[in-house]
Image (cartoon, rainbow, N blue to C red; front, side, top):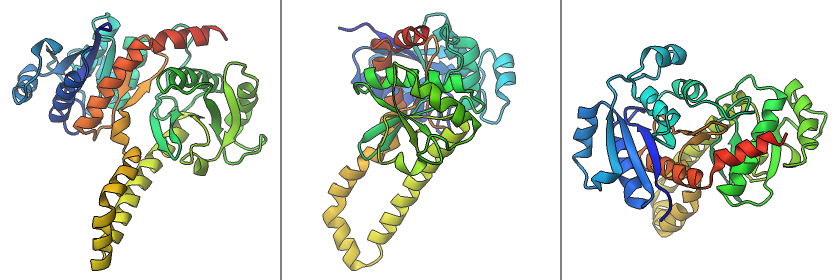
Length: 335
């Protein structure tokens, strides 16, 4: 049996907490034998939700936290003032070695600040990026950064490429993954000042497989395994991705239900269509890991359902067992 992986979950974070966080945790421990979950939050509320399920009590522990950091609160102030919040207490569990990883659907700002300040960056890491997997025609790609560093510099983007390479090699099993930088054209001379400065650094980096620029329209085709950009661009790409996927689903459903002929056709293709679209279901990929920290921090969507929470918890097991933080540290120290 592999070593037990301990995950501290912000039970109060997200639009649908604590229902989805508790159910996601219960489903996760049922699926993995190598997992223990700490549900950090208001104890009476969390226990009331837990009482609805059957589970191995040895694999889930409730840690009381009396305060909740709300989405709209200024993150730095909230982290400083709300020491007994579910976010702060869960992150200190990682800092103190009581947990290996942290998962939250709560305040993104507080999670990013807490990750940097409480969990802390690995030696040599200048910035810690958020890196979600996004579906493509060829499987999935890693988008790095999607929300943590809107004012990143060229050396930060080079580190992002190195971290992403470690992640895709060890988590996704892709040997020598391709790296591309988001640009407005394929030509090397294109782009803003940051892209123009970063391009030659990536091109001359010996331990990544850099293939040049990638335009946004080519990302869904899966033309690169790792998509490098600063967080402003990455977040726009991610949100557009999600929005277009949702709109396309509405358009397809509307078209299939428009008349009797299309309704009959819909019945005939329903199962095959559902199977084909499953790869574009973002819930199956879990949350976005914050790479380059001393412990794993995973941020899920604020609107996450129990499936996304479960998968976010389960990805912590793989991440920890593959010793991704240690491998990133070794990769960065080689520069």
